Amino acid sequence: MKCVLDSSVFFTDYPAEGECYTTPSVTDELVDLKSKCRFDLFVSAGLVVQAPEKGDLVRVREAAQKTGDLPVISATDCDVLALALGLGATVFTDDFAIQNVAAALKIPIQPLRQRAAKPVAWKYRCSGCGRYYKTDGECPVCGAIIKRKLK
Image 1 (cartoon, rainbow, N blue to C red):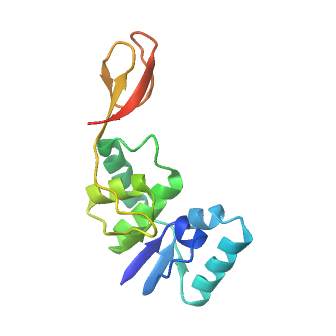
Image 2 (image 1 turned 180 degrees about the horizontal axis):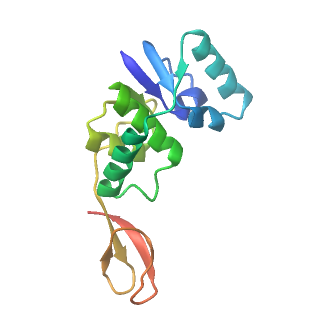
């Protein structure tokens, strides 16, 4: 089985077997000794560090826009999803935003320590006038805060 490892794998003692991959941006997030040591163990077992294809990144961002997760999903999260999309791999993560976008892209997920997230759709509504928008921020009509809500 092909798997793409999110940084959370290296912060826990979760065993991942098979053909494992991660992204350069994930390795940049590993700053403590424990996670670096776990990364080195995976590398010695055959972990491949690979950047995703640009076309796959575009598809991930489009899916994140549709699910409403684009404002909260990081560039590293997008890289992990794009690599899994390109490889046809399972993503190992506990990140709910990653799981939500993965569900929209039909990418298999393996949760680590938490329950699997149920797919959700987000909407953005002004806390002042109640208008709906595509992203959070400040309402151009009344100036109140636009907040993310479940659909």
